[in-house]
Length: 488
Ligand SMILES: Cc1cc2nc3c(=O)[nH]c(=O)nc-3n(C[C@H](O)[C@H](O)[C@H](O)COP(=O)(O)OP(=O)(O)OC[C@H]3O[C@@H](n4cnc5c(N)ncnc54)[C@H](O)[C@@H]3O)c2cc1C
Image (cartoon, rainbow, N blue to C red; front, side, top):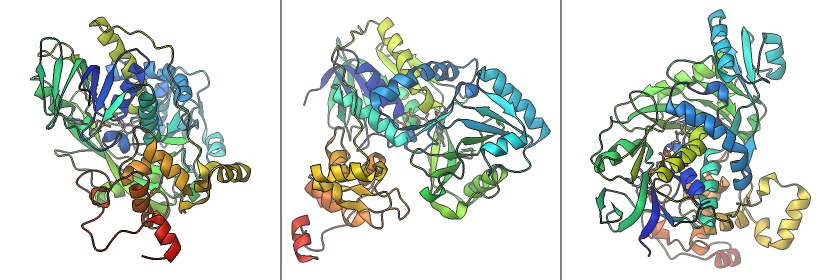
């Protein structure tokens, strides 16, 4: 295995993968090191997935500047990544006379010519399930919703396609300096690079301290959610924000690109990294969602989850070179809107490294990613053609999301391929539907073993701490044997 690169990126969340994608446009050797078994295992897997429009930027902050920069990158990224998005727009809802002042502030901040403040009748024409008692709403067509899973995985896929190496199970524990390179230390390997970037989310302060750089502790702020079944698609067609609060954008109701509806998140500062969902947190979310849409069908909830915002006391991003290792750049406090700002962060970091001497020579053979077909979304004619081409398209293993064996194969084999149950979920939505895996879990381990060559004893839900099997009870049986006998 090669261990020396021009650039090493630490962390495979949206920030690290956006950096990998951005730098893969240029002619040098890059590795991304991630402590988990896959990309998108940290903050980036549990958020709302809103690509916030300029109405929601925060003036006089670095995160605001990078948010705005990122917006102009979005069309290019969408094209290069072949990324499915829901360009739905948003309504920010005033439920009191005082809230109307907030709407005016948001409008003035956004300076978006197509955005407008409208009265209750017009707002309810657009969103009939809005609270009847609303006083006004601010409509902004610029808000876009993405699947955070799809965004991170497609960034990683495109970066891999363009030569970036992904190394998992690489927990960075320290740094060292050789005469020319920074040495990155993991328990079993020493890696070297001319430039190193850390993008470690909740652990970003900790990793900065490995290089003896001083920065405040990350304070996790939890946000909890309800995920409603896909048959609620259409209950809301736009993101519904409450009038903005000081600490966060408030509890909102939001459609997803896949057709689920999300309600959340609340904002709860914690003194530990605890991503459990709680009775009180969900009760708060329920109240917030009911204020916007009193009839929201929360009984159609298929899952709850929570995410932790990696916040610093000043609530801003901190991007700075190490005092100990001059070519080591730390990214700390990448909280909301980190997903939106990811492309802007990548461009900004590119400029910083360029000013430090990294030559950015653009490749002339950069390859765009082409999304694999999604059987669930295909019409009957396309489905027939796919099955004729490869019978694996005719074998559905997840009934809720209609995922086929062909899609599982692609997700396991396309670098950086899935190696866990959740890795498959993030790429192709197995276990993400109404039954939450009751059906597809019967076939996935066999497919992971046969197609992905993952031994049963080495199968995990999320990471090394969540093995799928406790031990062997009887001999394993192959797919063909199973089909022949009907049982094993
Ligand atoms: C509740 C909630 C809602 C949000 N909603 C939105 C939204 O709608 N829109 C938006 O723009 N933003 C939103 N955000 C913010 C956004 O999710 C984050 O800013 C973003 O995901 C941060 O990504 P990251 O890559 O920096 O961190 P992560 O995704 O946490 O990635 C860091 C990675 O580094 C790895 N790592 C850590 N330490 C080490 C180590 N020592 N060695 C190797 N690897 C390591 C971790 O395993 C992890 O994979 C939300 C956040 C939360 C919590």
